[in-house]
Length: 105
Ligand SMILES: [Fe+2]
Image (tube, rainbow, N blue to C red):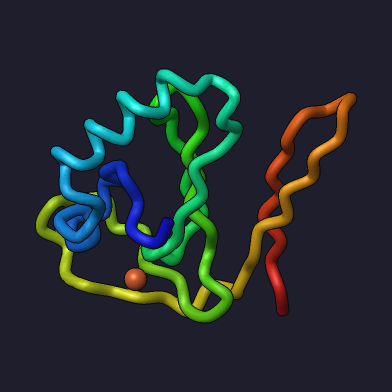
């Protein structure tokens, strides 16, 4: 999904996540399906991991700029030129699903 179903604490991004009522409905639905390994999303332009719906929700870094890590409710919109990155999801019987965040120069 694009917009994350969770709040991340970055003040100017949290109001534009998946609507809280819809996030609660998704959380309840996922709890009925424990086989779901990940909820993968974007939009936050920063690697973020949370527990959600009885599974792992993971937000991918941006392949361009990142959103600045400003964890206050009133922080202004801000991006930062931290290195671009992408996720690699490795799935093997012996490890299960493992997610790596890979920075790119
Ligand atoms: Fe977006």
